[in-house]
Length: 467
Image (cartoon, rainbow, N blue to C red; front, side, top):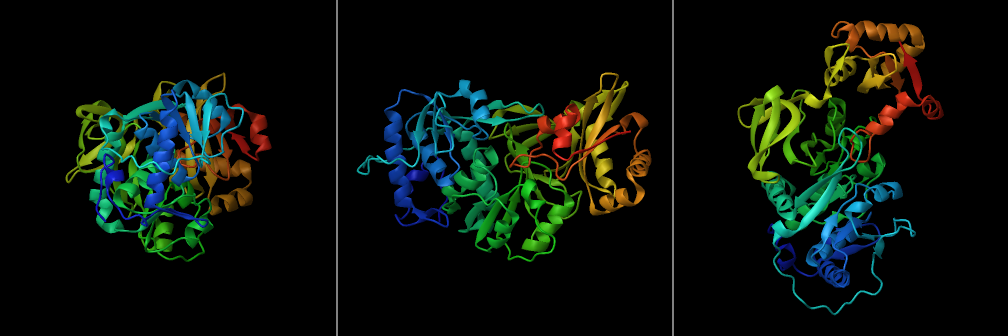
């Protein structure tokens, strides 16, 4: 199957019965995709609204809406989720909304609900080649504050990145099908779950895999899994599975234990993809060991600037300008690098510079802790550090055997081997899971709330400890 650019993918002449999308309920072929896009594009052209939010849970309907909006000359807005409050907070960015029944009926914006029941089936107008630079897409990233931040891209930027993904992994994936646990409303899912498969002629599943059991049951050598640390770290320890053709993970850090478990279950380490909504993909690796270096994607130039931060020149950002990140790195030969944390996670506590990343690393090295996140807590009298931690099985046993008081003393004593007293957290919250969204990104507002609202913590079974 030949690979096509987004500019002419719908002109590719693939045979009518080629499968584009599938689910347990139905299989969608190429001819139906083209017909559905044309019919929806006609409806959109009749609207005077320019900026359309696309909010579909079903990936096939999303794909239809995406390309119909493109061919109707509309700007595409992709909210991170479909929650009413989120859509209201982003309402200034769009004039109308396409969805598949998930948006509240009383939403004030003009709505177009899919699938269309009155679509025109006799549209024979051919598709034309797209000017990708003129097609505008707005995505959103939460950033460190948790507030949505609009990121504007052209379809050309996405097309450039898709071409590199195919260059790196196209031969491995071949004609396999694509299943996913991540949403297409974010750039990772948009690229890996829908646009890249479409350009490469790979069928994609229209519905999400939500539970680890579904991921195990769907494993097949003719299938590739697009997932995130949020799900991969929940894979069961005592199961066996068939192998996927490939497994991808992005959206947050994947711990070594989850990578090892993935290898145990699927006979391979996941391909981790490092990047952001702003930058697109930066690098990738398979975590054969904890300190495995990352490989830059082809076409990316990198240098270090003040503070050891990574600066990039990339075809899917701006090929003419350097883009500075907040990621501290060390560069190696052969276009490889390691991550050393983020410069925006350096804080001052009692005039001492403290790396929140380092404190998390020291916590995670302890045998009692599976995962942690550290932040600054303002308790009126002074600034200090707070840590939200997920205990390991050994940690749970230790806290029961020693008692809470002795356990926290022992934990602080272990940290003193590495950290100054001011860099040791004074407040701890023990949780069953670190709050993350379905992309595996930490929910900073919910994490902060664990320290701001005692009632919230008690109602959600959070254990509060201050030392």
